[in-house]
Structure formats: C-alpha cells, structure tokens
Length: 109
Image (cartoon, rainbow, N blue to C red; front, side):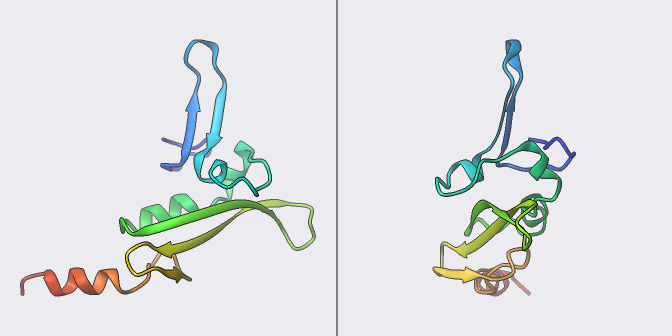
C-alpha cells in the first residue's frame, strides 16, 4: 500500500471505507516496546527503500520508533536479520551476503 508520502510499503495499512479513518504501521505495531507510531514518520522511514532494494524472502525486519540524539525528533529505527542463516544484517539494502551466493551458484552459465 502507498504511504501518505507516496512510497510503496507492505507494512503500511490504511482503511477509509465507510467513514473509517484507520492508519497503522504493522511493523511498528508488532513491537510492543516501541513508542507510538504517527503517519508523519513515513516521510523519513527507511523501510520502503529497503524493500525496494532487497527482495530477499529471508530478510526479517524489526522496527521501532526511537528518538534522535537530542531527544526532540522521532524516527523509525530498523534492525534486520536473515531468517535462513540466522545472522544480523548490518546493511539491509544489500542483505546478509549468503543468500545471494546460493542463487548465484544455481544460475546456469
């Protein structure tokens, strides 16, 4: 679904049918320790860019609303991991590096 800022994100959900006014981020909603989510956070959220760059089915994202260094601004903080190899992923746009090795070996020359 498209976020209020025009990017496609599978975690954003909105429902305006028959007078409903529901907007939520299901990635943030899955983390009970996170601060509350607001639609304005979609503007600087890294998740749509990560999903566009990396379509690996083994990439698991965990997000939360955190505060900036000064504590005044809120932002989305993302942690990523590989489900297949059970390793943390430091660069989610690229991936763990192991999953793509398997795909490269499977390609015929």
